[in-house]
Length: 160
Length: 178
Image 1: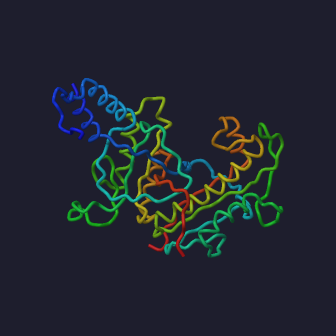
Image 2 (image 1 turned 60 degrees about the vertical axis):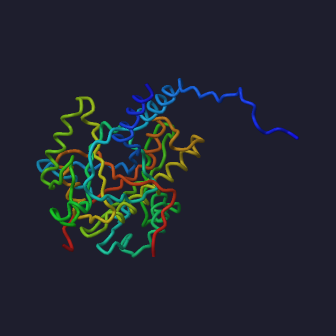
């Protein structure tokens, strides 16, 4: 008969954790490299429209963001359910866009001022009325390079 | 050591975002200077593809109610005008680097929308029009340079862009149906 009872002498060695900091640092650097700082808290619901031809925004530092959509639930009581424009961290009106663009442009260095890009993050159910107003305001502020933010898909199937 | 690294890691996970932004790049027209007389050279009617989206999100191409799935094909044929039909865009001969003297189309696409049009529908139409133009540019690039449009260098890309310029213009907004 084989004997199953161990006769001592053997102790399980603890796994060395000396390399753990290295591993964690690698993960840390990975995240530092591929992520970007969160700049604004979005206070409107934005469900982006779908496109097949979208291009990736390459220089985020040149971009300014304008959000348009219905206010989030906790702001509804104050601001209603109609789509609103959000610049930086507050709800704003069309008239404020010109100042906002001037301010954003001021933050870029001289060489980049002409390359400024305005990214419009607009809810797909918003009406064109407000979008057109924003576009006209951007033209008046001579911020002519714009990007309609969208989610890229391989194919779009249209209803009907 | 590991604890500090973990703390930093968690901090970065909390304050950063991963998402990359994608979207359609467009150039808005500058506001016309009221002191400068406007260009009176109207574009010939046959060169304009008129695309409208009304307040009920229905698509009208040249006044005809059209299905969204057909828009790309219509725009493709319009730009190309393969049979040189008289009610489709004219061509003019210009000199483009890499191509020499070629007949390029004078087509312009005019996109109009109503104040009540849904933004999502408007973007879908823009997307289809940009897709039609991109397809033609890509085809030309493959045929001429043997590689997709995305892989071309700046000069060649510029030449292909000149070949199929096809501006997609957004009309001055009209306040209708308010």
